[in-house]
Length: 399
Image (cartoon, rainbow, N blue to C red; front, side):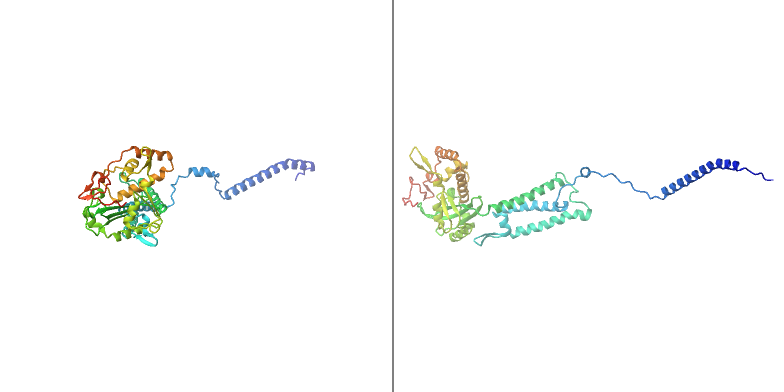
């Protein structure tokens, strides 16, 4: 027979069991939350760690330094080698021919007349050489995979070649700029040397003509064969010989025509007794040149001892003021023209400093002049040399 519980006992049992059920339910819910959290962690994708930003200045400092170069290494090596060769070719050709780099490339024109022809052979040689340099520079890279700076031999190192190449490129550009800036000169020195075609001091014929500009470029050095028979070449005085005139001589008219091609109408001629040289050549002031400036007058000095103007020969001026050894090599038209242009440039510079000009005048007066050739040799090979005090022919003095 089933025993019956009283309502009070039932309520007491429920009260005891309720906390237990609550604890079980809370434990179950906590377990489910733990399981869900673990499932979410397993299912969540991995996120890469984001590095902290690096400051720009620090990144730049950490990066390896790269050499500055507009061109690549291969191109710079080729340009440098071409510049080194070109610089040498230009200088050698200019020394041999007297033509500037611009004249070598395009010729020189005066009043639309071509007076210096371009040197085609030199330009072609250089172009061919540049092509060969480029091919030779690429060959190691093509066949062996070596760059232009891979090898060195003794002092011939890639760094030295790079430095020399850059120097040659700058030097070549500087040479072109200087020659372009100099352009045509304004001041020229013309000089004439004569041989004797008779025994009196007036019997002279033109045998050499030279023209030098203010930049000391020798524009003309022409030899002339006189029409009249030559009595004496006056070699100690002129430097002329039968061989020179026989090999290089030309008619006077042809020589003067060549000279005029190099002489612009705006030229100012300077020289020692320049009017005599102009007369020999048949040049006209205001037509073939602008004006003359005679060194004899420019360098005259007032002599208080004699109360008159003292004038000096070219050799005395060159010896005292230029320290030129006039006793070596004798005379020739080119050397005398160079002396004249240097003396004229010195005169120009001295005019800006009166103290120096006065010192130069004092030196000219204080230094005893050496006896001239004519004074030492009143007659040479039977030809009167025209010294007024020792004249042997009795001919009139015309100039």
